[in-house]
Image (tube, rainbow, N blue to C red; front, side, top):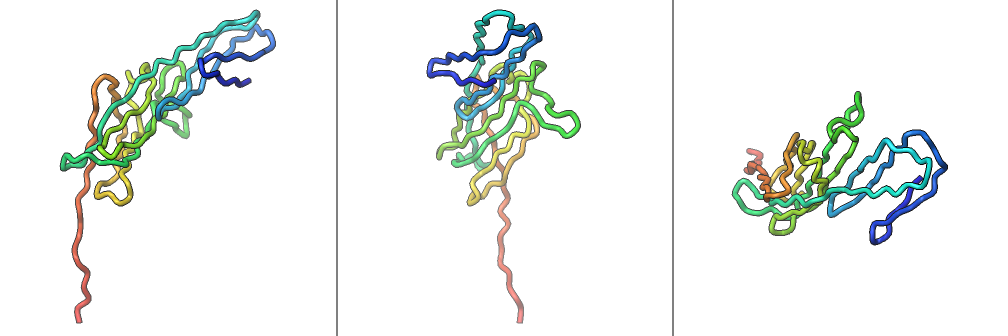
Length: 170
């Protein structure tokens, strides 16, 4: 069964009574972050008031080129988990909570992306930092990154310009 919250965060739905263990999966979007919070191990033999808290914060940072200049229009994405062929989800946390992040830098290279703060105790994986196609900087794929929601983090892009002239003698 699915339900959406109202503007104040309230939700409700009807289920048949059950003594089986129930798992509630809460999916959310928040300022460039999205994720899933799992609430498990309760039964529904009577009405249940289930208040769910999702601890959220903002990851603040800046993307600069190796010359130190801010780089605008950079797309950043990553996850608190990794999908593997053999095992399915890896990392996240022991309760199966997951967070995916994405967002763009402003023209001044600044980004602010929502994250589940409880998941920042483990590294986020497969962080992709993609500058605009007309940029002199190359994509930076970061396999593992500890996200800090208390201090601004700086990501540095690299790029070596190769140029020259092609001629045909004769």
